[in-house]
Length: 119
View 1 (cartoon, rainbow, N blue to C red):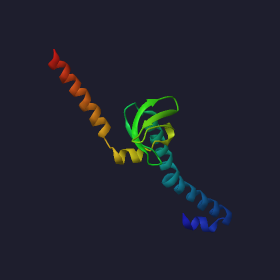
View 2 (view 1 turned 90 degrees about the vertical axis):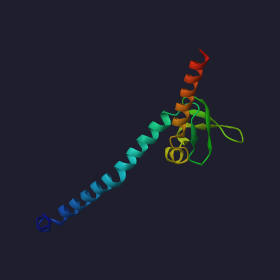
View 3 (view 1 turned 45 degrees about the vertical axis):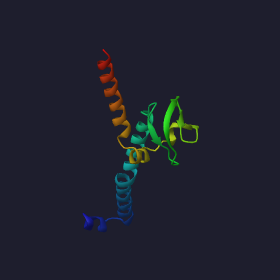
View 4 (view 1 turned 90 degrees about the horizontal axis):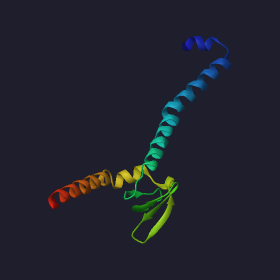
């Protein structure tokens, strides 16, 4: 195929090279970034009250109130109102991992056992 391109018009071979470069950029750079943005947005939409998060700027805290586009984050120094898109999925998972999910599971099992013991 390479030999066929050499025999053709140089403009056509140049167009083939540019299209090949674009395809490589799309599959190795653009497409993974789009996937990352989708998972980040899904993570931000699934934030619940009581979750521990880390923002893009590195602020750690617990969510105490959620509205449509904002949430209130409780930190050591006080409460901060931030937009939802400031939450970082990567930093939150690095810092807390499945800690929030494990904590919620432990709380539900302890409330179930305490309710059974009370009866």
